[in-house]
Image 1 (cartoon, rainbow, N blue to C red):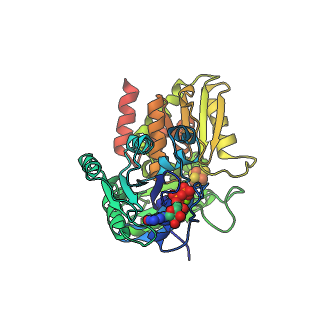
Image 2 (image 1 turned 135 degrees about the horizontal axis):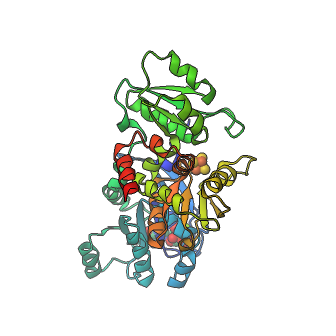
Image 3 (image 1 turned 90 degrees about the vertical axis):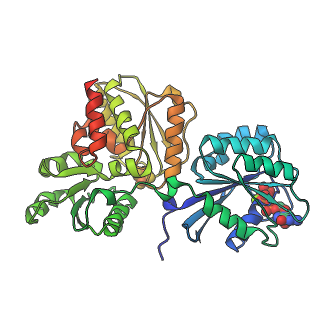
Length: 410
Ligand SMILES: Nc1nc2c(ncn2[C@@H]2O[C@H](COP(=O)(O)OP(=O)(O)OP(=O)(O)O)[C@@H](O)[C@H]2O)c(=O)[nH]1
Ligand code: SF4
Ligand SMILES: [Mg+2]
């Protein structure tokens, strides 16, 4: 059975000091021994992920983190694993014990609140001591939900599930669709999928699969072709398609073979909206015009695969950008969950389509870029811009196109 991809699950992070019972809570929530529990502080050393169904929300991913105990440790861990979990948690559960709340828990709360992440405070081990009423009032005033549990016995777990359901952010529940809102029932969309040496064996990649699924959900039709067959496929259709969506790497050929009055874009541009913010990425792409030889550019890619000869992130985008800028750029690469702290030193950040990341993580990265004052865009946007077909690639998004045209005037 194929599972819902991790990137679409509601991410719930469990944070707190060592030994407060984070792993015990995860086990109680999932009714399984997912994470090792012991009386020895520091039992969990790496984040433990557990996917499950949490109705009525649906597929979620619990992430049990390593306990960290003091501000110094949190500071250090900021640039390590736990910070990465802060970045992708849609909901943060701060686990503590009665009478233990201190600067450390405040620091976790601040990290989560800075990312506008809903927080639930869990007072575990309530069989040993109860929380003081004054403190609860204080949390109440801050509109932070609070649950008392005894993870070992399963007490309070139903309340915690309720609190999680209530805390599920609108941003998650009403996330933008990939393509569903751009088509009407009965519309036909042609999807162009090059099958070259980069294509994985025996399957389609996630953005393609998810786009097909979204079209099915919207009662629209998809016709999937390779770029070489596009022209012929279009000629065979009785009516022009509602849209053509291509892999960005075939952009130029597809732009040439698609009639001008047919909307055209790429999977990666659809994902700019689905995973991030379309207009932010449009503004980011426009900065390509301001790049000068020697400028520092970060190319961030979610998957850490082995580089192949004509790799999009390491070869093609640098090549197209260099041609556009007319000289060599200082291009740096980040892979997987690594994302540098010295963002301010970059003139532009170019991110992959992020199909493997959840939306919250991309939004966190956008926020980090904005705080550092560095523009961010994505692969599809960069490719369309540097190949001179940006307006064409924005044709399915009239508002973004309008914004682009307006800012060109000024
Ligand atoms: N009395 C009592 N003990 C509990 C409760 N929940 C967990 N414990 C015990 O507390 C100890 C620590 O539990 P863990 O779940 O391993 O705690 P953790 O927060 O994951 O710890 P680290 O992984 O070391 O950060 C274990 O001995 C548990 O049996 C509870 O509700 N009441
Ligand atoms: S590199 Fe990015 S866009 Fe490509 S498959 Fe991985 S997550 Fe998706
Ligand atoms: Mg643990």
